[in-house]
Every structure is written in structure tokens, then in C-alpha cells.
Image 1 (cartoon, rainbow, N blue to C red):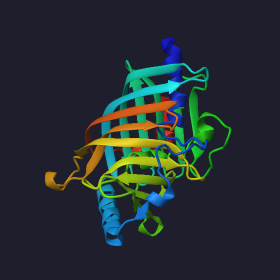
Image 2: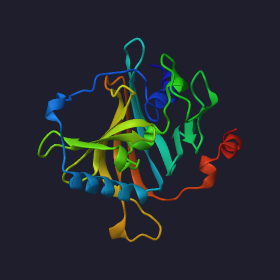
Image 3: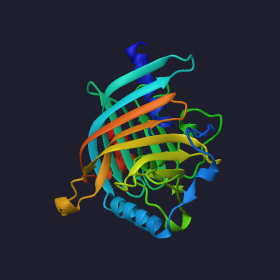
Length: 279
């Protein structure tokens, strides 16, 4: 595959994968029949949610540099791979996000959002330019690219969305298996799988309206986040190795982060400022 074509595919791919939720229903892989799932003790469930929300509350501002890798299958069935895309990620709760990707000094795309809107600065695809949408706009079935975007799903897939206890269902399939929490997420319904030993999210599923899986992430390599004014021992932890894919694995994104901290700037989440800076 020609390199220019490969790079052009990334901007469209990240819309459907890194920040998105494709509205195509798909069966949830590896799920046992409902009778094998049972509710866990209410006190354990409450403690699990409280611990998660406390961790997330300390990560209201996150910045990290890292590397992106993309794999995808095109309409002809050919598989493509784009390694070593440099990335910078900034998050400021509840809805400010910014993800910049570049390679060999060339900016490929900048994806971001504020309280009301999301946007993509696309420098490589055939649809290059600035694309803007609003969070309340529902994804359109049968559309392409931006029409399928649920941008706030990124927060869910990174395990950074607080859980409303009143709207959550906590279950398990048995001793030693992950605890499953199904709850409303920032980008739609989500299901979080918590490790019983660490009580940290190890998998997050972003769900379609019918409960099928749109995208799923695997969260590994948790690291302490350098937060100003917080002692090292009290710092919260963030997954720094994240794999995101759709159930059929036609889209796969790996994000490896390094040395996360809490440094953000207002201009990173201001569309007018970004428009001037990125021309």
C-alpha cells in the first residue's frame, strides 16, 4: 500500500476507532448465557464504584505523550498497518479532550471536544479540512466517518468515566472472574470489567443501544499520574497501554502512553484558537 494512501486512511480510521462508536450491531464475543451471571454483594458493589469514582476524580486533568499504532481491513479485505505515530493526549473533565497525531514532523490529525462540540482537523485524507459536530447529535446508521462518531466514548474506553451508582448493575460470573459494571457512560452505555484483585478496569466495552458491543478496550500497565500538590503515595493510576478494537477486529488501535501528568492549557480545548493555530 502506498504510504500516502496509508496515512490518508488514518484520519478516517480514528473517527471510527479511537473516538467513535460504530452503530453496527455485533454479537458480544465470549459472553456466557445470562443464567451464568449473578449479582454481587451490594456492599462490595458500592465499594467498587466508590473506589473507581475516587480514582477518576483525581484524574480530572490528564496529559501524556505516546505512540499510536493502527491496523485496519479495507473494503477489499486487505489488511493495513501504520506503526509509530507520535501522539499527545490531553483530557480535562468532564468533556474537554484533545488528541494530536503526527509522523515525521507532519501533523496527521487533531481530534478534540469541549462541553458542546467535537471536531477533527484532518490533514491527510480526501476529506481533509475541519469537521465539527455536536455531542447531542445521534450517530447516523448507514453513514460514514463523522456520521458514526460518538467522541466522548474515548473517555469510557480509557476507564476515565465516573459511574453513577443509581444507574449501575454490578454482576459476576463466579469467584475469580472480573466484576462487570453496566452503566451509562460519557459516550453511551458502557460495560466495565474490573479485576477482583486490583479493582481497576481491565476491559471497557462501549455499547450500542441494543446492548451489542461497538468497541472494546483492554487496559493494562497502570502508572501513577504526576498531579500537582499530591504526594507520590496518594497519586491516582491511569492505564498507559490501551488496545481498542471492534468485535470483528476490522479496526484496531494501540495507544502506549508515557509519564502521564496533569498539565493542560485552555487553548487546547478552544476551537477558535485551534482554528487559528492549525490554519
